[in-house]
Amino acid sequence: MNSRTIYNVVAVTLIAIFLAVLIRNAWIGDDAYITFRTVDNFVNGYGLRWNVGERVQSYTNPLWMLTLSLLYLFTRELFLTSLILSMVLSITAVSLLSFKIASAKSSALLILLILILSKAFVDYSACGLENPLSFLILAWFFYVYSRCEFTPRILVILSLIAALGALTRLDVILLFVPALGYAWWQVRTVRAALAILAGFVPLVIWELFSLFYYGFPFPNTAYAKLNTGIPASDLFAQGGYYFWYSLKEDPLTIVGILVGIVTPFFLKSRRLLPISAGIVLYLIYILKIGGDFMIGRFFAVPILVAVCLISQLDLALIHRWRYLPYVAVLIMGLTSDNCPVLSGSDYGRQNKFPHEMVTQRGIVDERAVYYQKFGLLHYPPEAHAPAPFNPLKVSGVKLIGQSIAEAGMIGYLGFAAGPDLHIFDIMGLSEPLLARLPLPGLKSWRIGHFRRVSPDGYIKSLDTGENMIKDSTLAEYWDKLALVTRGDLFSLKRLREIVKFNIGTYDHLIYNYVYGPIREVDLTDLYVEANNIDEWNERDIVTIPFWGLRINLKDRSYAKKIEIFLEASDAYRIVYFGGEDEVGQQIVPSLPSYCIVEQLATYQLEIPEAASTSGFDRIEILPIHGDGRYRGGHVRPLEE
Image (cartoon, rainbow, N blue to C red):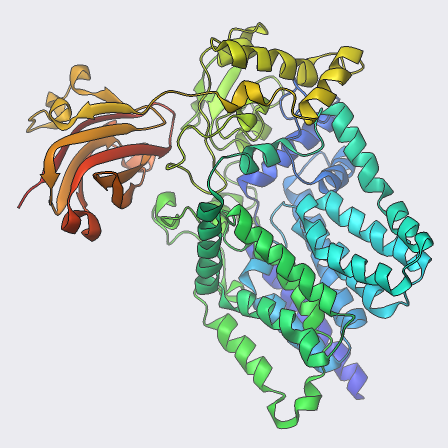
């Protein structure tokens, strides 16, 4: 066989291995079901809605949602449909890289190894989310950009591909912008500028539709996750931790991205530098928003773009060192604790409790959390309960109105519950009012899970259709917002309100909204001597508002441990203060329901060394997440 035939055999073999790895790793997370519920409602005639009673864009991936909707019309099944589509798209993108984009056989085989061993890329190549469609669009863009002469016709194609990428997920546009700018600069004519604008027509059409149908140009999730009031420095620090934790758990992906960024400098290619700039711009964006709670999710797309750049190298030019990159990739990939090639049906089983997989910064291996119930190798999924499904029997869900259920994890629950039940999302992803309210406490948040508190009367307003919100300015705001999301679609009054909302006319009605002051008590009010948990009764229990409970000590304490009595099904952040200065903090995680004997439990915690050394005279208990009803009992520093 000639060298070309040998290369084709090896490449096809590696792609087949990639497919096998995808099948072994394929899974669907709760976030995917958020889109699935909209797909189900749309196909069944309820419109592009999450809760059928209001027009709210709870999904972030319009093109992915519409593609799934088209297939769902025929399959009437979304678990296998989404996974098969994902694998087809991912394999197509990888094949395009190997046979059309790579400039040399040696680099093509190298990038195949990188992608097979990258946990981020494999985890999100078949997970029910939009990543595989982004992969194919980005590979297509790079192929056209790197191979074609820049003419107005090519600029139309490039901008059209970029528009499709933005329709798949809007923030991906950052990867395209520098390259499009460079392509236009090479022509620098009005016709070229018009060509780029013409390519973006599909994106413009969608934004106009979104503005008309939903009342806003961006998904509701964007308002919920970016409208938090958290200081930029705190989010930047959280983003830095997201990078560090990803490097620790999946070093090949982070190193691969960095190598891809510097590749144009080695090649001395001005044409490829804008692609590197797009990756850098996207990484800065990840830092700015604080990363994500899913490890690897935001690095799956940049590693694909990075290997596009790496594929332009010719390893034969480094002669005797040409095998070193393969060895480095194999070592970094195969020695990783969560190497996708070595992953099987037992993935996630070794973790006793879901909360043990969450770091103190709120980042989690999402596939490990859901794989045992939603992994392809466990098909049919355990969580796909036979009809009729009763969501009110699911742990953590409670009925708060005649047809309204509150939940923190809304994806699968909402999809399985069907259109008749209004799922009230305490994170605000699908609730238009909550998404626009500030956080009740800036010290108590988990990245990607910015919990709000329902204003007094809001639930009754949803349940009855009448405005019963007690805060007068918030009630005024809701009147106008409800007209946008629930009013007659073609009403001129509604269209006027849409304009006013989007130019900020009503922002003042919520900027000054206050949930309530932190509850303040003295330590002596909380301590009740009890030798047995059964001696506790309701008079000994104190309610902890979501925005926090502040406990004042009579004297400064230097205790090494603290005993604290809290509701065990919830998670809390304990913050220690000496005077006005924060001197330490720690997390009290929730326990799984099957581990909880009593509703409340006694914890004995090691106080952070900085707090015990400098001393503390105030403690704040800040709920992180749970069922919304937070309670505690005594708090007692254990003096030696």
